[in-house]
Length: 48
Image (cartoon, rainbow, N blue to C red; front, side, top):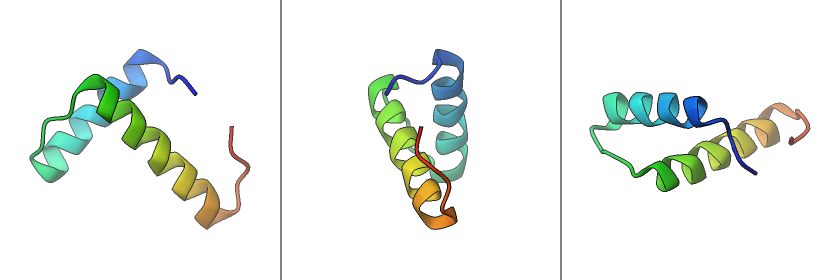
């Protein structure tokens, strides 16, 4: 699953502000996908 570049950049910025850790673009993309899959599981929403 590939996310739009801007979405990954925004996730990366939020993650850095919240946790103080700088992620590579690839790591941010993986963590963003994992986060959304977790939220879909918790809320019962279908995965994309």
